[in-house]
Image (cartoon, rainbow, N blue to C red; front, side):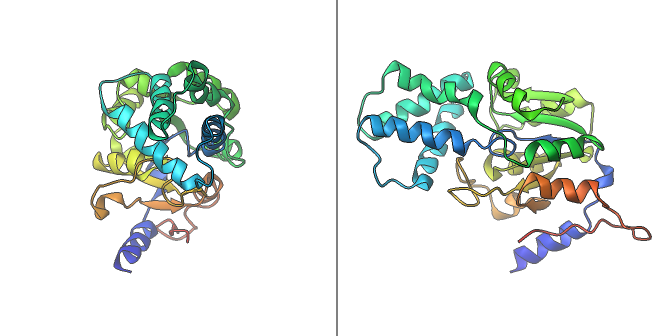
Length: 266
């Protein structure tokens, strides 16, 4: 209860007018990656008579752990990370994946769709802020995704450019340098507490947790954050990007008041 009250009070004084740019995690926040991950991995498991009765949440939990493990060692391209994830699924369920199956997850990325509200919300937010991508992705894979997003970004920071994966703070520091902004003028929005909220907050960057509907509510296809509870609190929680756009574009600060009426969504 005390934690919820703290978040409400903090959100109540949040001033969106002070930000010059909004950065976004891409996959899970702008792009509905679960609609790409789950069918691809279910097809893989079905090819080998595995995974019957396995809940979507269980598949996503395994994906999050396997992905984080592949990203935690020396840098490798995200395409290779996704291939490692497929191999780990094969090892976990005791079968051998073909070379085509190993490539299947990475090759599916180009087809992963944006959430229904993503493009419209980005158009709205672009009227007021610079828009930035900070994503654990390869340049060529994001080039395909970018075609679905239908907006021009002022900066794109990929893991390939940074040679590191979030939750490394290096990716966020690179974005700040590229934008020539202090942390106080950047707002970061992401679906993952582990990848986005915790590292951004550690640098003094304000955060929005885009808590999308998921087969694994509140977490999605990522590793659970082990950070202390106080470090996991975003400055604002919204259900989707349309909710964020509605807050920051349509009447942030009513006339005659000195603060923005921002509250946590249930």
